[in-house]
Image 1 (cartoon, rainbow, N blue to C red):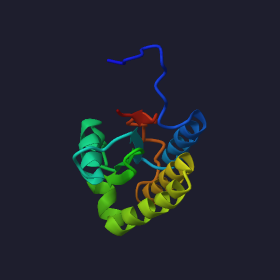
Image 2 (image 1 turned 90 degrees about the horizontal axis):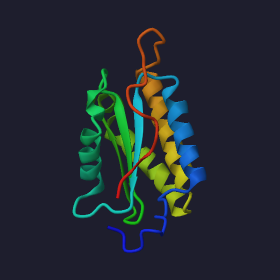
Image 3 (image 1 turned 30 degrees about the vertical axis):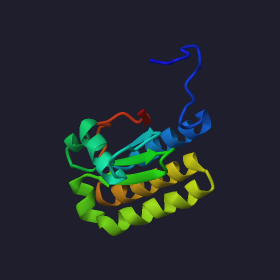
Image 4 (image 1 turned 90 degrees about the vertical axis):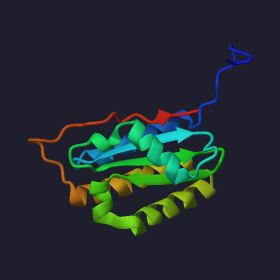
Length: 153
């Protein structure tokens, strides 16, 4: 319950950053059968970011994609934690080194508080990897998961 219900809760990402990220998700998924989702919350209490990302990944049923090629970008802004969690199909293709590199790239933008840019570029990099290993097939592919950012607590 809010103490002052008339106060608007401040968004974790501003409107421009949110549009940039959603545009990147749609662009990334245009040329692949893979799925990318972004989950943003303020805190990642009591667990590390990778464990939280895995928890969210499965709660969003991202493991249900046909080729097991879903990827979740997880960010806890106030706690300054993030992780990228790829399902077994894409993880077998790119490996842990790839995920570590795109997280490091995202952290460079976050250091300058360019959150939208960092997330969007991470999503595009994931889309490029997905396109390489899971190219789009107009006969069989469909958008299996929503493109919007999921906001947590």
